[in-house]
Image (cartoon, rainbow, N blue to C red; front, side, top):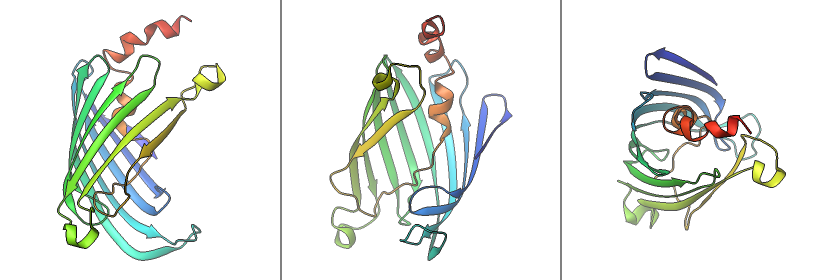
Length: 192
């Protein structure tokens, strides 16, 4: 992965290799996020190929280009929302809406819903995906400062419709921690 700054208020990322458990390829992302703004806009484009089921170095014949345009909004008091539209891993088109609450101790709880153009007759509940997300900072368990977290997603069904590539290091979560007001809220941790 390589991150860079192509201009003022602009951030970029290029990632190549095995991007997640089931896909390898290349992923690019650009983010516009002014330091003092609650709004951020992002664009992501991926070209991936499905990995062999044995998880070694081989690939299957399925390949797909995916991408999303995303708007992020900091609603204040630890509430964040994002809306994405684009193409998912199954080749379906649709949108995702996510709401997340980040507590001052670093814990995160969120919910999302996705609807795509996959017909119900093809995947049953495949055109609609929903779930809950939980993120817990590791330092709560060890008592030492640590930036790593444990994250999990609870989904009632995991179907092909609305599946999105799980690329590590997406820009918005990395950038927002160092922008106002998050940086000002965490400044007291510097002096501990």
